[in-house]
Image (cartoon, rainbow, N blue to C red):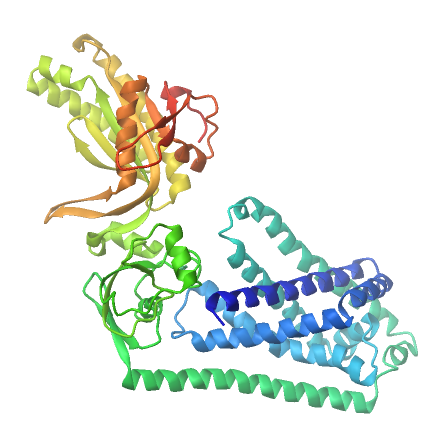
Length: 554
Ligand code: FES
């Protein structure tokens, strides 16, 4: 089965199980009302889940999901992984340990020995007869729910509508287990009271027999042994495979900083990075969905196995050139050299801090701002050079402070122009808002400077600013001590072109609509235009802001 097919199967099974948990927990929640309400709710719950179709779907999903988890554990070449993946894995492995006795003691004994699995009987076990089992079932409830919600979150988080729905999901994700536990506790208190009534417990357990109890213990033990064996087998097979591959078959991945990581054949490039603790972006956790792990292969491309259709689809989506592959999907068999294209967050911090790894540049979304002083050439022609230097330095000071205060990096001062980057560490949404705030402050600063120099200037100073957001390669460039942090790429050209367009529209600011959208800024009151660009088939939609002071929000 293809990786895509496996993923669909895992998600389908996960959804069936999560639906089951939701209805089961809502049934528990009725305990807040009364034990009787729980029992009445249980009738509907059984109607839903105890028919042949639902039974097959539920238990097939449970077994398949478990086996797929063990298969994923076997396939994983390194156990180095981000904390959220480790949490998901450990929770998943813990669930069967706590679940087996619950299923056997209730559903299986009901099927085999006609034992009643009413709330009265089960709560008596958990609250009166064996409170330690009540504690373990509470842990099971929380673990299974967290595991399910994490799976759902990591499945949905790239959907465009998901960020808007997060608040609802979070509310539901917290409310359901809280209500279920409240119902469980309230039901437990009621059962503890009822158990004091002579004969009540005997009635609750009337269908239990010594034979059913012995069978329950025996079956639970057997299934636990089988499960333990499967986990041990998975781990053992991983060890055997690693030893064999390490001894006989391996390959090396060379990274831009000169490091070569040798790993057994079968590792993906992402696993090689993780194995050597090399920061490598992998937002979807290596599931081939986000494309953030992509690498440019600078040597050994021809010898790589061809990309699967799923990998090709993701690469097509980001318009990747032929020498780019997904590090989490490609399993090389020979030496290769790669350049990771997107910075892992912590890799990015290193980039900014020392400029070592940054020398080859990393691709990421960034906000680029270009500003230019209108009529400066005429001013330069009319004034002594010393005056020009004075005015320029005051101008650079005013705009530099505005950029820094807004959280940007003013990285190029050329002639009367300035280029600044935003969102390098904070992401494009925050970066767009910062860039707009900087633009307003820059215009204000230049107006103040112009007012101060009124007597010396033939006409007021005026600034034109262009802002665009998109992918660019950021890194340190230059030679020896003269290196600086900058960005290169189409996004930079577009921002420069938007700054030039401020002359055509005689305005303070031209921003791309992408910037307004990412900053969640209402720009409906500003004229919309489309600007054609060389080397781009599609024009860029922009908003023209005549006076930056009119720009509010963002
Ligand atoms: S880590 Fe998401 S596609 Fe590779």
